[in-house]
Length: 468
Image 1 (cartoon, rainbow, N blue to C red):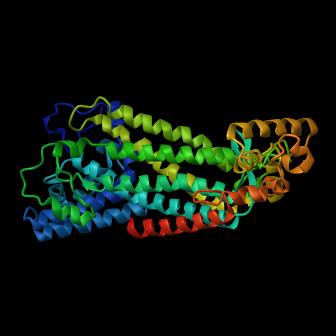
Image 2 (tube, rainbow, N blue to C red):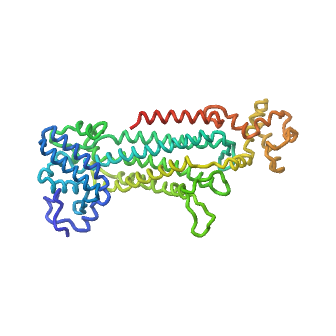
Image 3 (cartoon, one colour):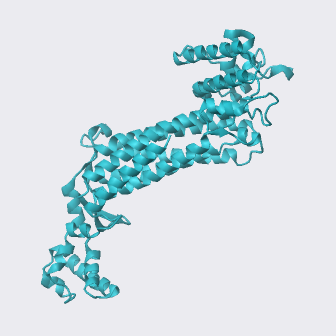
């Protein structure tokens, strides 16, 4: 048994908490990560209490000075965390009382740990999103610049992982950029809903003290106070929304990782990743393993698990706060760390990708990737599309038998399938001609890729200018 009950709530208890239960219910081992935000919220709360006359100016100053000293102790790793005090909030409050006496006990006037922790988490998530957003910007910038440089680098485009039509590497990279751009918008949209302040809701019903929640919200940089006290302390939608964003983002990064892993293989040989993003084998000296994209691909399942964990955590909770919500922090903290690290890895790695242009070009020559161009050519000559499709299918079958690509066939060989075919057909059967022909917005023509890269730069600059 513990020797004493927790002084923040133990008055109505006749015996101390069991030692195991004390450890089992404590959260300080992980929620101490909220210390900076907890102190930030407490300073704002004390400032507001003084403005409305609940605290004197001297009491406010003592509290703020004490909290500032505690912040320094924590940053210097001199603070002694106590499991019997349960959580980050009571640890800091107990230390404050030790330092400034009974005035420290007045800090909690007009609030509860329920609205306090909800506020701390939102402050934490707001800070975390700002860091993650910066890494997203770096990744998008790297993708855009590499795409612009590789606007004319030809590679095969795939459907069903089979050669379909030639595209440019720059066009492919801009497809990645479009995925991440949507993720960027989702993140900023999530931040808007995070930036609502629960503080002042107290335990669940508000408080009888004459608090001014708008003052506190302004001091903490929140857009507004939460409208309903019951919802304010029990809402964790923002955590679910963030892990939903994280799941979609990691799904996108995982798809990119899969392509990077394939492209670095000897079978594809499309790109080279610098050695600093790879590792070797303990037994096979020739190996160069793309561990960074493989790990990102693997961490995707971890993020999916956090989303499911939070959804399950919340699905059966009645209003308002329940102890279940203590379990929101570990998955949320890990999601933040994982997303940040995966984005940092990609933002560093993507601009360093070295395309093997000759290998990409040679791969695009295989698999009759300009077959659709031949069909389009015939249609422009007046042949019905279904007939053109049949003609091209016959020519591909001939190419398979003779081991010739369409562009390698002579005019006479092609004319055996349709007399409509003339010498100008070779303008569309080359890979360069094929990609250049897709010269419309969203197409893979080099001029369109450069224009799309410029539009992406401008859109990103606008988003950065109007965000955060």
